[in-house]
Image (tube, rainbow, N blue to C red):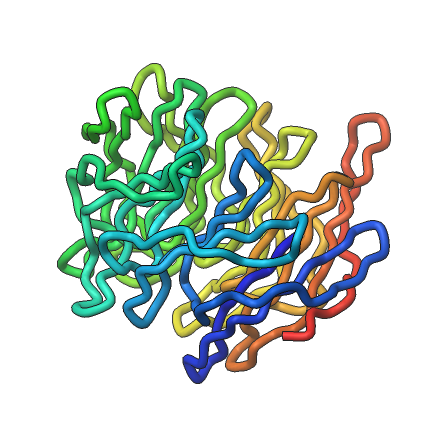
Amino acid sequence: MLVAGGADLNGIQFSSVELYEPATNTWSTTGSLAFARSTHSATLLMSGKVLASGGLGGISSAELYDPSTGAWSSAGSLSVPRFLPTTTLLSSGQVLVAGGGDNTTGHAMASAELYDPVTNTWSATGALTVARYGHTATLLPSGRVLVAGGTGLGNDQLSSAELYDPTTNAWSPTGDLITARTFHSAALLHSGEVLVVGGESANGDALASAELYDPAAKAWSTTGALATARELHTSTIMASGQLLTVAGSALQFFQAIASSELFDAETNTWSTTGMLATARVGHTATLLYTGQVLVTGGQNNGSELASAELYQPLMTDKIFKNGFDAATPESN
């Protein structure tokens, strides 16, 4: 697993990059980014290379990491510098970058761009119907991309959702979320539905509610609520089809929590599962080839974290017993 860039609580951005090896449970440094960046995007391409683009501070550049050499090379530049966009690998192999924040004004943007790995170039594509950041983007089995929620131009939480059609390069509105939310998570379930979890409400509180999007009906429905309201968490689909939601903030001002929960799509219910050793918010979570989930970094009530933890799913007679183990800490 590749961890690239980031920032500390003083806003100092990193160019350092590290690799995690599951077989040995160790981290090692690899080639550094040409530009220090945070709140950027990182996308695994079909070639096995990783595309990093944008970030805070007016960064419009993009870079490609080659795992065979451990080095980065230029991948052109976005037409508009942006932070906190969503990036989606399309079935064509192109990467869709949508929305995000304007580095100059801090406001949400509606523009979207496509990266073509064959030509190593960027091009504008259809603009979102609603400017947004803090939203989610989910690739559907149809090849369309579902964008939901986020923060709008008036710094308001959005309930709107829209679909990107790569055959027409155009966006169209789809059913609205039942609850406006930003900094939530979204995941494609094995059923083809999209589950949206938690986030921040219109009054600034963390949400426990969850919703299901049905692509056939283009409509949302409520489903079982989390035991603990949370935002800025992570959600990861497991090999079992269950969704693992980890940590985040249960209150305002990044007050980290350590709890995690599992969603069972067959019963539309949540159950609590293993606690993290360290509460964290703004972390990452990655499903490894081992079936484990690696939770990395984040913040803990005013401090940056170098620690990492492994979530281990264990199955006995279809009953999952789950817990976290310590992974070797990152150097940053």
